[in-house]
Amino acid sequence: MFDESKTAGRVLRIGLPKGSLEEATFKYLAKAGFTFSSNSRSYFPSVDDEELQGILIRAQEIAKYVEDGVFDIGLTGIDWVRETRADVVEVSDLLYAKQTLRPVKWVLAVPEDSPVRTVKDLEGKRIATEVVNLTQDYLAGKGVHAEVEFSWGATEVKTPTLVDAIVEATETGSSLRANNLRIVDILLVSTTRLIANKESWKDPWKKEKIGNMVLLLQGALQAESRVGLKMNVPAGGVEKIVKMLPAMKNPTISPLYDNRWMAVEIIVEEKIVRELIPRLKKAGACDIIEYPLNKVIP
Image (cartoon, rainbow, N blue to C red):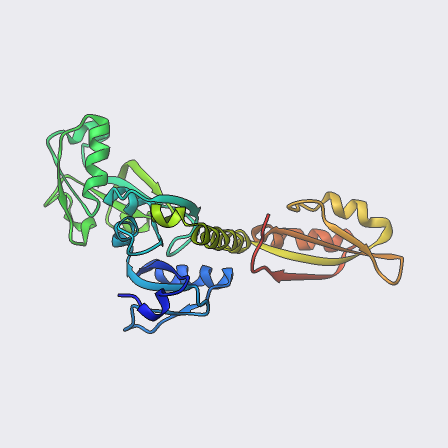
């Protein structure tokens, strides 16, 4: 499976999710400093770090391969860790998903006109889902006995003709609404996790390598929703400007060659910039520059 000539040295073997999470995973790994690349036919991506070796595989399978030691680490949803009941080290929660930075939710859903209002109403009924173990564990916790069948796809269209309810993953809920489905309950809020094999986690070199990767990945994710702002401010107006700034910490302020002016630099949430910049301009700031961030390490 792996290149034996490479694994003879110090190498961390990583399972990467093939499919819906693939693009986002490669994006954030690259921002963290680890550039993986592959073509559509290859399951063995190249990487610009000789201490890493990866294989692309379905996210549903990664946790078990990590547990078995085929991979030292893997990136997969906590939903698949729970579904496979894999015994692994959950190293870090990484909040990213295939469409948005929102976590994926596994929800119990029924048709809009269904009489089902709570999970208790599904006693003796039939439920279709891809996550059979997760659903059975949920029902057991609620004291409900229902038939849970594995769904091979197109789960949303199976109610009410084939089943009474479904358990399905959603980020935005748009697909459920499009199929006239109503959410009854949330089983699990799932985010991407970096998980590790228990024996690999005991190895000092591997543990340090994993820790460094997590630090950089978290920094890349922290930077995703933030931008930097630079501006020049009249020396007499600095206090007024500073009061307007929702910075992560106190802004950086430094004098210009012309001592009548000061340079102010901050990091802010990108979503507020469209309102903040006009206010700063009206308050006397000028030469305002907005720039993207690659990593933010607290």
